[in-house]
Structure formats: C-alpha cells, structure tokens
Length: 194
Image (cartoon, rainbow, N blue to C red):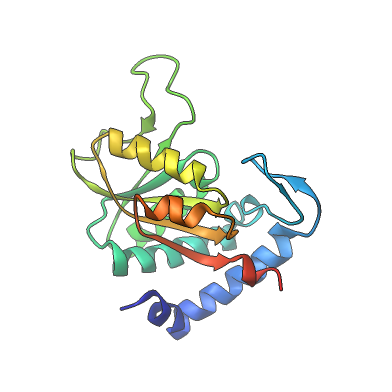
C-alpha cells in the first residue's frame, strides 16, 4: 500500500487531520526566528507543544505505527536524536506495544555519554547487530539532525530502513536524508503556509 493510500484510509485520515489541527493551534507561529540550523525563517513549528501533549502523542504514535507497519514491518525499534525525537519514539513504541507488535524506543545522544560506557545511543543493548530500525524527527529543515542520528545508528551496526518526520519545511533536508534512507513526513510546508 502506498503512503497516499494509507493516508486516505478513513481512520488514518481522521488521525492526521486532528494532528494537523493540533499542530496549527499549538505549534505553528508566523514570526521571525533563528532555527537550530542557524537559518532565519518567518515561521516556526514547535512540535514539542504537540508531541508532549497526551492527545498529540497518541496521534503521532498511531500514525507512525501505521507507516512503519506498511513501509518497514520488520523494524525492531524506533528512535532518533534527542530531544525532538524522544517523545515521538516513546509514543510510537507505546502504541506498537498496545497493538501487539512491540518496537522498543532508543535515543541518540548529541554527545557521547560522559561516564560509564561512553555510548552514543541509549537502549541498543536490546537490539541484535544488523537489526532494522526507524529513525524519527519532529521537523526536517536542512536534514542535519536526522542525518546525525542515521550516522550514529549505522555506526552502532543497525540498519535504518525508514526515516519518519512530522513536518518537512522543504528547505533542502529531504534529499540529504533520502541519500541514506527513505523519508516520509506527515506534513510539509504547504500544509501550514499558502
């Protein structure tokens, strides 16, 4: 089934429409801002305002699980670069468990752990070498954050089968990510700006 066909299914379409409404209401702002990439923008989407909300997290988990089941059904875990990916991975992991197809969550650190094992990734001990995983992100701009996560996960001996994000700002990140893994986003710039 294609992503478009999945998004057209009544239940999935309803989840997506409600998530879009929450993002517009709670996360979207038209104002001048400097993004984490250092780029200036006239709009901002603070997805944590929705991914940390109970309803928003539930919707994200359901939508990401539906996509993973269609596009990367053998994925054993889901995670990404802290902090934006943390609530997304947790929501997806929880919904996957509730649906009887549990996938663990993992967190990719921005810096290696400063003590103990010095590891870059939390919770890879439960994953066998070569395990298939999905990398998630809240917003794609230049693709740098997701690319760093993909590189760390690959260096840890895992296979990235899919990259998922809530929003693609359409500012050059998609081709950067797709050079390493297929990317699917729930929304794009055009869903927020004319």
